[in-house]
Amino acid sequence: MRHLLTSIAFGLAATPAWACELGLPAKAQQGGLVVGTAPKGTAVTVDGRKVRVSAEGRFLVGFSRDATKPADVVATLADGRALKCAVGVEKRQYNIQRIDGLPKRQVSPSAEDLKRIRTEQQAIDKARWLNSAGADFLAGFQWPLKGRISGVYGSQRVLNGQPRRPHLGVDIAAPTGTPILAPAPGTVAMVHADMFFTGKSVILDHGHGLTSFYVHMSAISVKEGQRLERDQEIGKVGQTGRATGPHLHWGVALFSTHLDPALLAGKMPETKGKAQP
Image 1: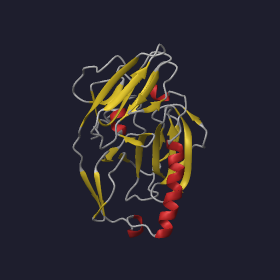
Image 2: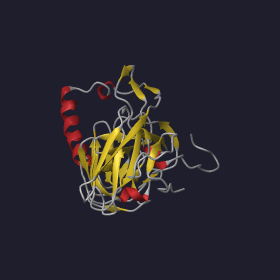
Image 3: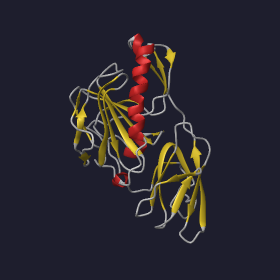
Image 4: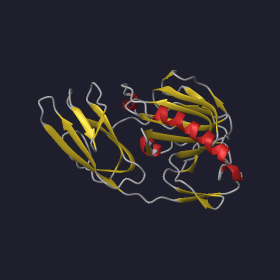
């Protein structure tokens, strides 16, 4: 079932109180996304950085996995008055996930591999730093496929016994060839047929610096620059790149801030009468 945008924030803390006149909550969870509303013609900064404001006055505030400080939001109105708001952060507890049996090269890459990885990361960064005017994120997000959640956002990864970076997305296990559908409208910002860690990979641009990432696919169904509506096919589940079984890794980021896709999409829908975790 489609998860509609019925609130202006994804990943709110339990406190429902509003912090200011910009439609911002008093608190948000680590990994959460907040959509604020400002009067038309307003300039908005978050922690001193100017952010895009849509024609309807919508803007985005994102919170990283390890965010601890409140986000300071300042909206300067057309008449020069300023509204100042602070959104606090609710800390989360993260799991530890151990994955064994990976090829040594994909846990400790060689110098040549690292050169390739840096080049591929530049392509990812280029797509993630787009700041397009569209506001497709207002349509809300749904899960790109139904399946067993095999990896959650924020968990500390231990690969072949070695601590590595936290997992900054959600893994959905499904058979190879399962269609992956666009969870929200967007434009294809990057297509790569073979990345070292992520294999066949696609990034969608949803506007204002909000992008989503689909990796380990067995096939890609889109081209760069292509406009997608919700439920159009992006590709098919696979096991390319660093993966021990067929699954989709789904990531979401606001520029370089990695968000929790599960907070955007809500609970995984039931499939064939069996609830997913």
